[in-house]
Image 1 (cartoon, rainbow over the protein chains, first blue to last red):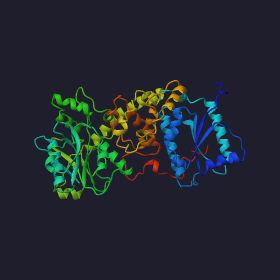
Image 2 (cartoon, rainbow over the protein chains, first blue to last red; image 1 turned 90 degrees about the vertical axis):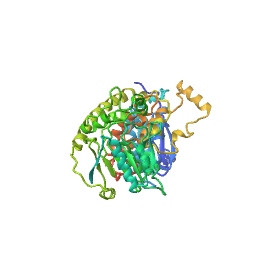
Image 3 (cartoon, chains in turn brown, blue; image 1 turned 90 degrees about the horizontal axis):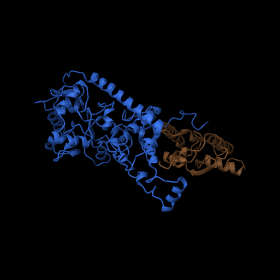
Image 4 (cartoon, rainbow over the protein chains, first blue to last red; image 1 turned 60 degrees about the vertical axis):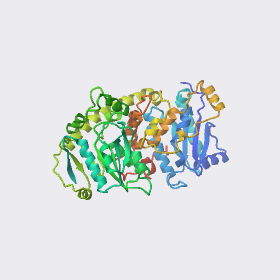
Amino acid sequence: MAQTDFEPKIVAFLCNWCTYTGADLAGTSRIQYPPNVRIIRLMCSGSVDPTYVLKPLLDGADGVLIGGCHPGDCHYQSGNYKARRRVVALKEILKDAGIDEDRVWLRWISASEGQRFADTVTEMTEFLKEKGPNPMRREWAV
Amino acid sequence: MRTLIPVENDDTLAAVQGLLRQILEADIVDALLVPMETPHGALTPALVSDPEMLDKANPLAPVMGVNAARLAGRVSVREPRQRVGVVLRPCELRALTELVKLKQADLDDLVTIGVDCLGTYDVSVYAATRDDGGVDMAAYLATARSGELAAEEGLAFRDACQMCEKPHVEQADVTLELFGADLTGGIPVSLPDEMAETLGLSPAEVEDQRKDVINAVVAARTEVRDERFAEIRERLDEEGIEGVFASCIRCHNCMTVCPICYCKTCLFKSQVFDHEPIQYANWAQRKGAYRMPSDTMLFHLTRLNHMVLSCVGCGMCTSDCPADLPVGAVFRAIGQETQATFDYEPGRDLEEPLPLITFQEDEWLDVGEE
């Protein structure tokens, strides 16, 4: 399947203290990465309700990225550990409900890892190009 | 302690009412939350403080209109409060356990009185039997002894009951042990020694088939459950959740009757999904058509994420779905997998924390690190 024209849309929920700052560092360091990601800043990956992930997926976004501090580094001590459990549950439910759970990524990216942020977005964009558009994009009756 | 409440003239219900009256009169509790027969012949939970009125109590009737765990929460969640005895079915007891963990109920002043469940009908089915003289209670209660639970000819138990593999009380302060018992002779009851003393009850040798009968019931029901889950999973694989729930009309009944869905400010009852007219126009243009009301699958998937780990399988959602969708079966089938992921069983143990409010540092180490 030729997907050369297909530019995936990624909605990213990034925590204020680590991954968002990491994304900022990628920018200020002039590190190039694909413009396919739309970033939403949250105070903590632990504040990502599953609804935030589900809404873009069902509306046709091709991927959702959740970025948080590395385990042990959460600004609020344990938000990222709770986020991890929520993502595990969410992916299980998506899989059981017949929805592609691989479109949801959770990544730990620290404030100093601008390069890792850029690499993650590059990797996710390539992955989604390979996978093709989210079928929900065409489904009107959801 | 285990005792046998004598049944006279084959009137099992009168014996149950007698025990409840004793509990209330002995001042063990200030009131009882128990299913009561209304003057119009319907059954509804009621908070009863007058022992004389317990001649209308009927916790044995095979009908379930609400999951009363929510009501047990309402009468217990805050002080000041009375001491209340709550007469509940096994699925209601499990829901109560989850509500305690969710801080929507408090056991400190509750006495839980559990009754083994032989299966229940939907309200409409039960009400319709009244025209023909009602359900044959003697035949219904007789199924407790053999464990060959069955609906009356021409009727069917609620969908959830048909696949319920936990119809027996596992944890309660007082347990009416129907399974394995000849209920025309007496009702085996387990209760704390202190309470038995207050009530003047002494231990009795009870011919014990309970365990064997429960094992047989659980095995039979598990078989039905597994078949049903397989059927639901096949549908989910083929059609996706948007196929299985395609005719959902977004009435929110499933959420309203769910004992676990307690949020007073549910997102889906808020104005979050009320948009400007031009916004709908944009969406319609983008996809060619736009389903309204919108976000139906979002509703179900969000509810799955928010409550499925605590889903006790009471099936009120299915019972109250006007579109006859297999809501409960879908939630139970997905719940089974999700609960297994966290080795969590809703209603099993008060000490087990809810999976999403706890964590361990060294778990799912690969998640987030790829």
